[in-house]
Image (cartoon, rainbow over all chains, first blue to last red):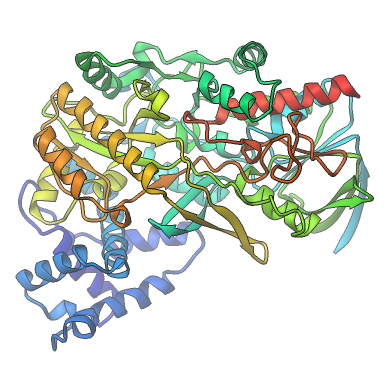
Length: 130
Length: 490
């Protein structure tokens, strides 16, 4: 499974479709936005690709579930992320925070999402802004 | 690599709040000054440019924001500017004079020159030059007004922040590059004055070593990349060197030049830890409009804490709101009612800047005493938000919670463990501290090294204690003081 599919799956688990606005992490082009950020800084998402592949096997490594993250059901994914979040081990909480940051940073910078939450970002530097 | 030889009366390393004022003062007295800046020119946002995309453009082209890893409990990242203007280019422009009780502490340590009268005299010059003015109501934005309302309701002390941004239009883009150059970071104020007075600036010039012989400074070796991308070796001869590379990089350069025999370098590292609390209101605030850091609460200044309003865009704000899933999404849908604020704590915890080769890293452990202060400050922020009418209040932490009442918030904070905190810092200080005893300090009260003649440290490294407030103006004052003292003794 390529990292794009894993990122979409993680995105949907963190930000499900529906609710106050329709678009969710699984439907948005998270990978495209992420690659845009990384390439702006002249880098390639090499470490993120490895990290996402590693994360996909985490349910197996940590909880002996014979499933990859992407194969878990919606409820199982939610449970798994909650376990990471509440873990006693700082490394597991660190993985959760890192992944969550990646998803939120990319998702909430998408134009479509900014429109949905009424975040108007043009820096006009005039009195209209106030 | 070809070599360039040059000569100057004074070499200044760094163009931030420390280096640039020193360069201006000495250049205006007719001395030949060479300034070395490791970073690139800072850019700015264009009018009408998307704020987040503009910030990505500016920071990716300039690499102006750098961080160092802090190893300890809790793990943190410390950020600072890395461009012409240093951290003044990427901050919100907040200016505070050093508080009286901090100056008193310094005097008690033997630094007798720092009377309030003396510091205020220099502060007035700094504030007139930049100039520094209170945020006016027009540029404040609704976030500032809501925060002020909460403080007023509690009967606490506070006020509009003073900033080096006269003529600010309140577009909220200070950190990513003011589109109208209203914010007078040092690359738009002190540095142009120094250059006008005849100083020479080498951009993208990295000071590799300060040359020292028989206890005297002899010059600086640097590598310089010119505008065509060609690399040069610079050897500059000078009997005066002022280091203003910031409290993380200055000790690394000093250790590289002097060796590790001078034990105090890199120690006494203070990071001015900050905790963040966010809130969601029913009313429309649009925190991204108006000055991001527009209002402060100094009710707890004597307890060595200051509370400051902030403003962050949704990609960052989403990380402040705890959890994930539909509830998180529902709170994000109310982002027009979001504001955040931070508490800065004057830390008694002490760390050390170390390095692997030329790359610095930091060892720091937050003491329980400071952790308790942080929690107290975060509780005070929650109190302000609830008193202003917030519906939801939440702390930035690894396993956060959303509180609907002050009691819920305080109970949640009570349960919060130190290792679950997410602390940030952008105010490193204290790594080549000022003092009277050469055994436990690096510079004297004139900011000159006790043991190496002609070597000055003019940045936040010299601060003997944490400043409680944002240190930008304090550093400018100290740097101006160092330059004037040097000129008067010359």
